[in-house]
Length: 308
Ligand code: SF4
Image 1 (cartoon, rainbow, N blue to C red):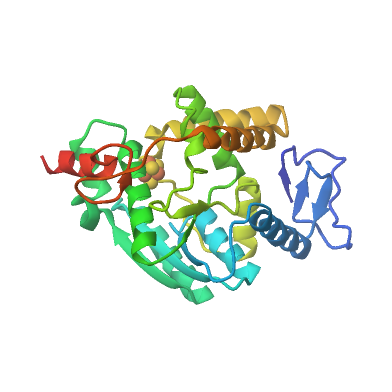
Image 2 (cartoon, helix red, strand yellow; image 1 turned 120 degrees about the vertical axis):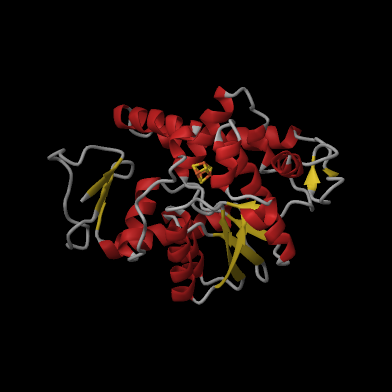
């Protein structure tokens, strides 16, 4: 049995669900042990509640789901299908071109889409930016994730627009939200927190149905749904500032259970307040026509730099 926010060797923890079946998980924050059936039901119900509470989806929406083939995005796809809402889902995978890593997750993404009968599109860094991530890393001294993040965000928004979608669903879980808040504070970039809540027609509206679900629960759901995942991390992950912050947050959670929920709730509060005051003008990039805050967007700047 897995314990979320606690120690699995704690003898006081119940090992049976209230239905009498063996528990697969103990949730410290609600003090409940759940069997497979009741955990999956609770998980799906929570996703549905968040989708309704934040008005994420409505009848007739055309939703692009960013599916990397990792656990979060595959679980997101399964949960959206389970919602059984009258919306259209299209999965999009961005292939960064990371040898020995992306091929495997691409295979998982394809397989899960086939299983669920969801249309699946793949777009590559090589086609969009002229180079794979492996090539970029050989040429550039900067931290790879800064290139990767900008290019991927740009490509997902563009793919969603090109496919006529009005929503873009991404698999950010509760841990990701907490890490993002801490990273923005540590980098002294607090205004970035409000960016996601700014409404602008040029950006396809991003939704995060897993934003209140702890990462451990996403992993257990993936296992119970028999999603075959590649456990290996991206080979460049150790460069990422996020990896450092993840470790810090996990250690703090271990010592002070409930920290992740508190940090994520702070994020949502700040997002509302900062979002209201984010009035930055959105321009169109002179080169690609995509939305940006300057004359040339970050993606085109990077692309031009890569061509030199
Ligand atoms: Fe890209 Fe960095 Fe994530 Fe690897 S760890 S996929 S380089 S953002």
